[in-house]
Image (cartoon, rainbow, N blue to C red; front, top):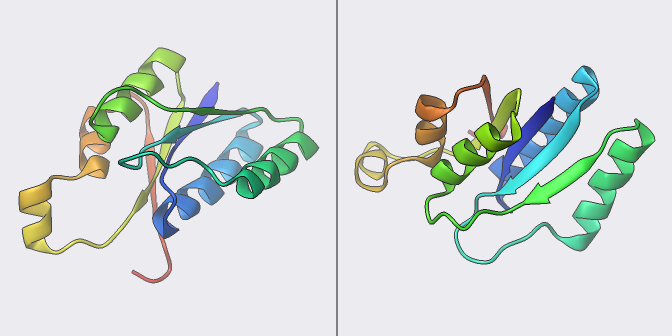
Length: 126
């Protein structure tokens, strides 16, 4: 069993990571972080060490993975299927109606195409 977190270095990504850690601890399962940011962004080394330490204290493993697919939503869905994820955790951000129409939504794609449950979380600022 694996909890997959769709992570980007932004408030919604950090909220998804926090919720993913809680789910992994609750379910006593591994945590897989998938980088969904556009461009070359990775977890900050200090942040990664903190997450690894927290999970290690509870006997849980952490894996970080990226995809060669251009669309982050497709990447999350494909990796979740390949890894047999039992849940995907994603962070939400506020977007205008026009923004939703023109740009599409990574979270929407994940919600519609995922073959496992999806937990969506948002930051308190929304």
